[in-house]
Length: 454
Image (cartoon, rainbow, N blue to C red):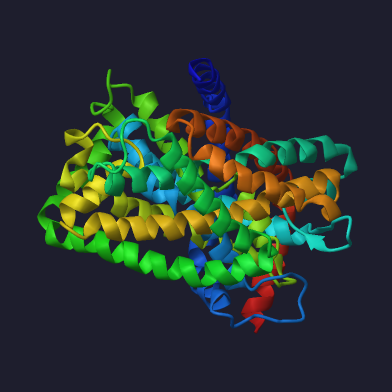
């Protein structure tokens, strides 16, 4: 395991080198300026689309705009916000949150382009059903000569979409918050992790074998409810400690450019950590968002792009920021050696004594499960593209087993494997989106002119 930890640490570090950060962040900046800030100018119209004003049951697709956004948010709002923010602060200090913000701002434009393309270049799978995702954008939009790039994305997606992080962190929070303090689990907790992992796998199997329609139906109910509960607790902490909020906003801003909160004061570590965790949190430019929004019932690519662009704002600017301020205000980032979801649990326990950590556990349970539901769909689409849609369901059997395996391995290994594969998934996604950006803007001009004319 030590050898594997070292190998995957080096793999993730190389995959997330300066070149990839330039591709994601620089590409997002290009989209932002090239679109002339469309994500911000048409926010009101995006909300109208989301409410169902423009839904047409006869359109191609499987789920509504709202269900598509819920499915995408189910994959982003969850452990990336609860655990990922804690990991960002642990590894990069408070300044890492600033770089998460910056990544989210450019990520709104990235999602507008990638998810517009997901509808614009939907392709048929081997069963004749329309599908969206980077692999279809590449083959339908760029041509068959680019198919190796689509295969590359699908291969990386098979691993990157596995439920390792969610399963690992969910087991950790139940073990560290409930069972260990009461002496119900000792230092050797293998069998506890295994049993909880098995229960999670069984619960997930009930939903994921129902496909995207069942996943969309479940997540559209679970995600909004859990966001309200989680945000209510976080906002209560901020309101009762309002006098400290400006101080910690200031710390986030100052540490973003000094790195004093990081060992050795490495500013580059702060930047890399923030962008990596933001990519895991809001998935802008990774490609998973294309697969969720590509299933929406619509014939208007720009509409889905406008809906999708709200994801990074909700996910990173709102949810991640409140989580970060909770961790900073309660001081657990300094007073505890805990990492990941356990650090966030300590913050909830400090801010809301007696019941705070239990509320967090309920949120973590539903967030993690909804994320697992969405990721299983992404993985099946990748396998379906590679070996045929009639055989893609085999991925779910492998996926369910991996929930159990991930429950018993180390957090460090899990983070590095998933991070590395996310980096590889981003390469074909961003290349294809930059290549086809002109097509999106051409369609956008037509759509907004038609919208203006009524």
